[in-house]
Amino acid sequence: MQTAIQLWTLRELREPLSDVLDRISAAGYDGVEFAGIGDPGASRRALDEAGLGIAGVHVQLEDLQSDPRTVGNQARTLDAPYIVLPYLDDDHFASERAVESTATLLGMLTADLDRPLLYHNHDHEFVPFGDGTAFDALADQTTIGFEFDAGWAHAAGQDPVELIRRLDGRVPIVHLKDMTADGKPTVLGDGVVPLQAVVDAAREAGTDWLVFEHDDPKDPVDAIQAGIDGMSSLLN
Image (tube, rainbow, N blue to C red):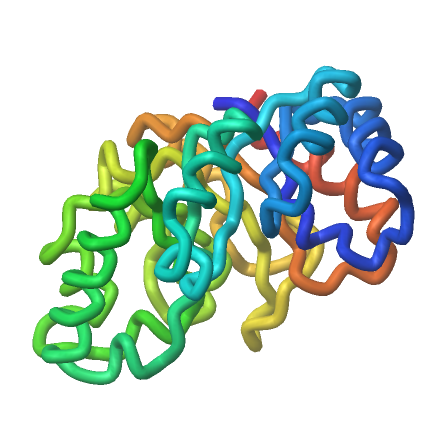
């Protein structure tokens, strides 16, 4: 698996993208994941200059619905292998009918793109449905892949290892995130998520990219190094 950092982690780092990417490259990451497309040509050049790959790019629902052709062209310019829908609100998972509609929506979005669309979970997708959850129902009713966020799944009371195993072959990207016992993001290794088991399950499930994300780091510069140190120890 290759290692990357989700650039949302570094949103408070007020530096040119080229400088941020140089920091990431120097720390030892293989690539990054973009939180929004921005200027795809300039971003692609900056990636090349830093010697970094790209795991994927987050694109909001409104953009996917309003102009999928432009999104596809921009992703092609970035050479992003995956387009990731980073969030759908609670209403999309509130009932069995809502999940059916969400599954249909994701299928329609996928049909308009020339590369795989992944859905990134948080914790609200795991509302109970019968013997499972809304997330389980969504997985059963779709063929899309997932950018599986192990930290948020754990915060929802789920076993991220079992979910990755269940989604075998459908989790090309795993967000490696640690959480405190009360469901707050924290430094890798300081929380309660079974990180080593998550990494091992991801490897067995054919995951391409292990992406470090911290939703609210105290210091983004420190987070860069802490993320790659944590991932490296788990991958060795």
